Amino acid sequence: MYRLILIVSIIFLTGCEKDDICPESTQTTPRLVITFYDIDNTQERKNVESLAVYAVRDNELVLIEDISGITTDSIAIPLRNDIGLSNFKFIKNYSVENDVIFGDSNHIYIDYEMTNEFISRACGFIANYSITSFFNFDILHDPPVYTWIQGYEIINSTVTNENQSHVKILH
Amino acid sequence: MKINHMLKYYISIILAFNFFINSFSQTEADSISIKNKFGLRAGVDLSKLLNSAFNDDYEGFEVNADLRILKNIYISAEIGTEKKIISNDYLNTEAKGNYLKAGGDYNMYTNWLGMDNLIYSGFRIGFSNFSQTINSYTIYDVNNQPWGQTTYYNPIVNDNLNALWMEFVVGIKTQVLNNLFLGFNIQLKNLISDKTKNNIDNIYIPGFNRTYDSSSLGSGFSYSISYLVPIIKK
Image (cartoon, rainbow over all chains, first blue to last red; front, side, top):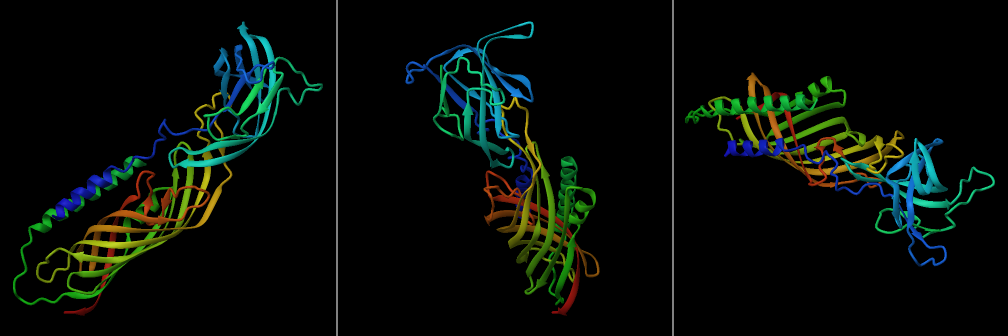
């Protein structure tokens, strides 16, 4: 009887290292979902031909790997977590030759508030965002330069998941 | 570090087993009337002292005491303080606080003449008052490829937290010198309630040890050295 108690306890104590690895199925920090619509018919989805998106980080362009010349009517882009603003270059008709980028480039500026939300001991925190402003030009550039993105609409300013579109872009 | 822990742990299990098997070879007491010592036994947890000495991420101290009220029944309590840093890929947290555990033990062991060893099982109610500080955290974002990982170093302090749990204890205490005892026990715990702040789970609760996302169970062990102050013999 005593031995049984001890053995059961040992088995119990030995199996105690679960919960320490963040499972891949855990909901991660959501990306901003953008859908593209026709400027002439704002209810109609419209593909962007060969779209690439670069993140602008400290005057340096970093290509978002899964958006590098795709034809699509919706994308999901990650936002910067260390400060509450992100700059992007949306490039239509994209191509690269000898490290030179070709295409129609349009600046996107997004300003947002972040809330870091606790998930679990293994995964820690994820970020949620609340968009405060969105511009389709570079706010540091005077006068502003507009190219192929002719309008936008913030549909959902709160970014907590990727199940719905947050911003509608008209072109 | 983890291997070190596991090693200590296995050694302790082996020692416990040895004692166990040896002790079974004793025979039943005969009919000569013997006097049992009744008194207050008080001691400290050696494992917490050793852990504090050898691990940078831990500081702890525990005093334990028991009082024999019937031939086989003891009232037992532990009081202690702990500080523990837990660090993984995404979090660095520090828990710090005090705890009190109180309950009783039942001695299942029939001693030889004049001996006072115990193989016991017991029950405790534990209460802890503590604080938890998230020293740093890295945002869990699998899509952060263009921006890189972000780690925040501004601490989140949650204080005045508390927890209540119950414990099932199995252990031994053996008299090595007159009135001086060495003991070992293992504890299975079940968290009844804990107070959290800012929706942040309590990662470590002093006295309870680490928590689990998937269950309210926990575990622990202790080595103790204690001294019996005999009050009466009967």
